[in-house]
Image (cartoon, rainbow, N blue to C red; front, side, top):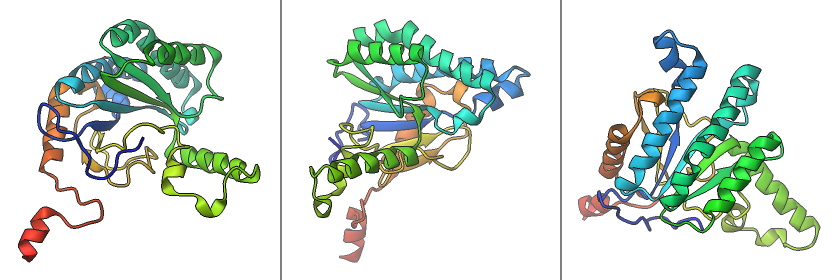
Length: 254
C-alpha cells in the first residue's frame, strides 16, 4: 500500500527516510575517465550496488528502489544491452542466497514481456525465493519507465471499465496507483541521482509527487555507505509539506 503523506517511520539514524530510490548514473563516465570500456564501468556499478544494498539497512532504510535498465536503454548498442542483461542475471545469481539469508525481499519493476527468457527465469526465482522476507525490500526497476508504467496502469483500468467491473466516475488516485508495477510499496521519501546530472529521467513519475530530490556529484561505481549517509543527512535537513504548511511556517505566521 502506498504510504500516506507524513507517515514516515524513524530509522536508527533518525532521518525518517524509510524508502530511498536511486538513479544509478555515471558508469560510462567512470570507465572513460580511467581509459576503460563502458562494460567495466557497468561491472564496477554492480559492486557499488552490492555495497549500497548492504549499507542501506544499517542506515535505517527499509525500502530501496534502484533504476537498473530503462525502457529507453534499448536504444543503446546491442553489445551494451546484452552486457546490462547479463549483469542483472549475474548479480541476482551471485547474491540471491545472501539476500534471502538476510531477509531481503526482491522485486522487479517494469515490463516483462520484452525480456529474454533467461532473464525472466532469474526474476521469477528471485521473487519466488524471497517472497516471504520482510526485513528489507529491494526493488530493481528493469525495463522500466515512469511514462510506460502509467500508460500500462491506464490500460488495465480501461480494460476493467470496458468489462463493466469499474464505474469510470469512481476511479480514484488510489485505484490508479494499485495498478502500477510499484503497487504495494510505499512512495519514495527520497530520490537520489548520482553523477551530478539534475533530472529524474522518467523514473517513478507518479510515485515521486512529494519525494525529496538529492543530486550528488558521485559517479555510481564510487557509491556506497558514505554518499548514501550524506544524502540521508540532506533529507533530514528538508521540511516536507506535502502541499500544506510546515511547522516553521505556522510558527513564523503566529
